[in-house]
Image (cartoon, rainbow, N blue to C red; front, side, top):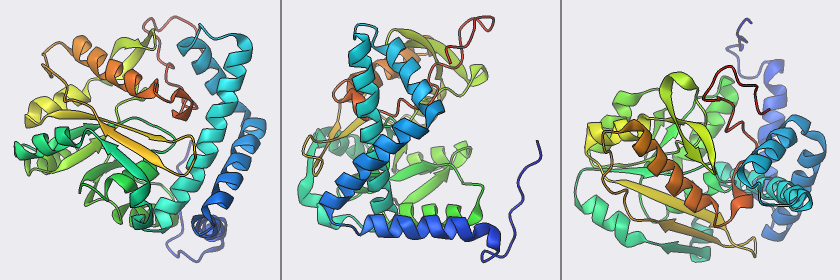
Length: 305
């Protein structure tokens, strides 16, 4: 399939839908908070109805990860996940358009002693996060307390890419291109904290299989590799939206012990376990919409999806 070519002139008609979308995000960002919540819930309900493929992925993931739930409980879980991610859409709009200083008194930040101790070592920090619905907004809130870098996947649409980069650069010191391992290692060795989320399925070539919610899941080995190359402590960072939908909790957990161990499966298992631990606090706020279990240990086995 041929790659899409984007015109060099950013005012070209092809970009008009992008500019319209960016305008809509600006409007969403400046709405009163209660209006954001109401609209976000509406977005979630609409996505649940019309995003049939994503709903299917979510249903499969929930069935695999939470087999103890009844069919009715799983349906409710899926609905709550879409609502949480609808709220996340409004939070993303806010973090990309605005500074978030006005939210600082709405944040409870636990476990800061772990980050303070890690930074004091002078080796930098590898922050392990996960794809929560509050991820972008949580990153912005984190920037109110600690400077840091984040991994960034460039968008193919140059207009949207510029918008996203400009928005995220308000909250992070530096955006590390996703495939630029040298820059990532260099930033950590200079003493920076770099945010990294290793909870997606990137395929067999870069992964080992380790349990995640009781399912043997393709789990990337890069986390241990980065830790080995830098000698930096690895700190898990949990974040969630509180039940009032107006305040947030961030929490650093203790650094991973005996990591890396030299055993890729053991290391991947440890990373998966701590991510699972973080997710279980508010499991509906995780991004269950991606195909987390798309790669099977036996390539001959049929897809879960």
